[in-house]
Image 1: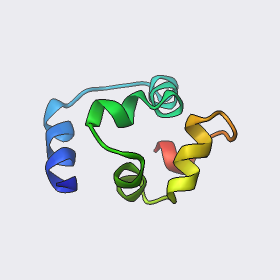
Image 2: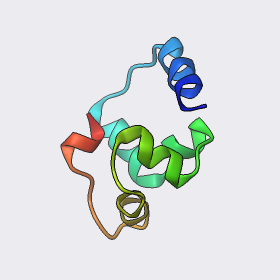
Image 3: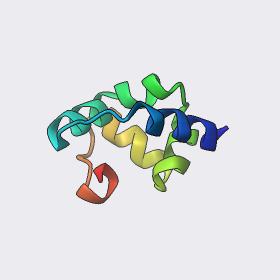
Image 4: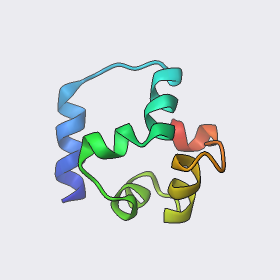
Length: 68
């Protein structure tokens, strides 16, 4: 399923600034837009689920590695 979602997003060829991408990541909009739960999204971006939870809960700020 993960590869299908990634292919769909890549086919859209959207362009976002780093600021827009950061805003979508912090708010959780990016994850919800992709229709993924926190576990699936964490696997996609190669971080632990708790990291996603802390970022979306405004307990932590994302590192550039996660954004790019």
